[in-house]
Image (cartoon, rainbow, N blue to C red; front, top):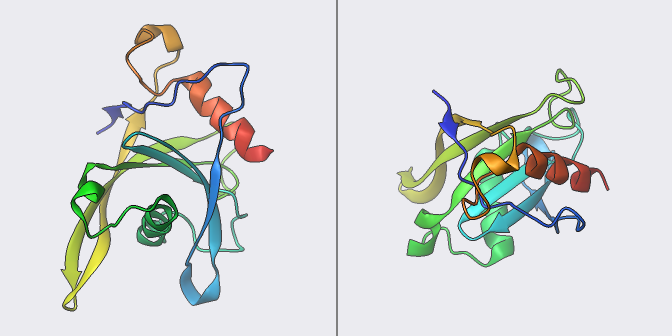
Length: 159
């Protein structure tokens, strides 16, 4: 079941959004990188390492979340972590079976649980997100993720 996006990623169309980059630990030494943008408690990330060179963001979701938290100075074991929402923007870069213009966003269901007696980040679900077609549909103060905001993120990721 898809949910309506509530990401706060609106931006002035004349300014490229500032994206940060972080490396995450992949399997068998195949580390990857994601571009990400944090606005308040919303974090949108997307692979910038070509598929086949690293572990996908879906398969390494816990490592991606942990790397972003470390880069942002957020203790994933602390109370602040529970208020963060993570969104994976899947594009052709990370998933070569997709067409260049084809992308998908999923909100990650993230919890901290015990695995073998140790606290670990666990991604329990990927919830498809519906992105409104226009910025005006939600009004200027809604802070929703719009099609133009996603396209701006994708363009900035290519730079």
